[in-house]
Image (cartoon, rainbow, N blue to C red; front, side, top):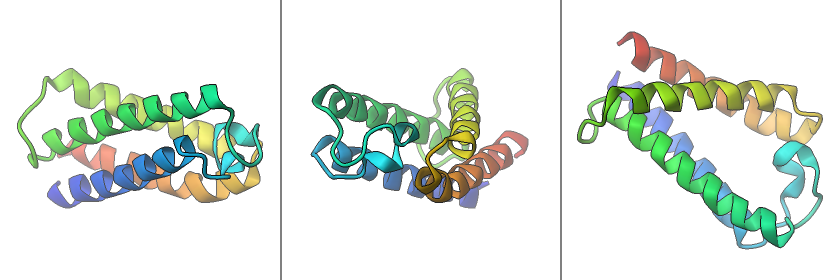
Length: 121
């Protein structure tokens, strides 16, 4: 279970860094949000990227707690994080943006697998 926790948290950190770069103006709009924006995100979406990064951090914390890596959180936080992870995975596998699907599809599948390992641990 600990390994699954570390993998999940490491991938979440990568996703948080991606969101931070998008918020700072990195021209990666085609890799997020269904590829709706090419290049830099518009300012409102940059603020959304900050919010998404915060949610990702909370999800990582909930999974790390479940794995015993950090202090315990209420059990519902793990299940909420796992649910959001699964929904994100479906969205990334179904996105019309091929680059987003190719990049984040496998990452989110691995996140779901780690989350399921923690659920069954």
